[in-house]
Length: 173
Image (cartoon, rainbow, N blue to C red; front, side, top):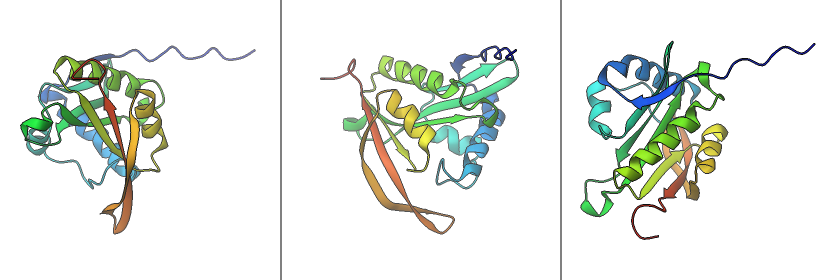
């Protein structure tokens, strides 16, 4: 007789709070450890991270056991012409990967970004990070191009695939 499938993971998406930082930082460190998520080699301080991300556009997936993942937007420029453009970061705890947490985070962040007047979201993803590429493409991001040898990680030049999602609700279609 087949084993019953486990109950679906129960979580909610909430605005990130400063007190979430230790768990957010830990999840960020798990992503860094893969070598496929970011050029960062260690999580930044709260002050540096907080200063680089929009305070109104950062969310966490929260369950009884704690934070399962996070997503946030960083402005791409301080120039007025780019006020509706931001870069997306999405990180999911190792224990919650493949369970729909990333999709829920990104869907919620997209909704919140459009409510805040954002017309374009962009993401830079290593070509080897198939799960992140699939997540973003499944949420309406398209590949714009490849930034070849854009930076070094561990002394090795890495390419980054640039994706963008243009809102059909904000700005001119």
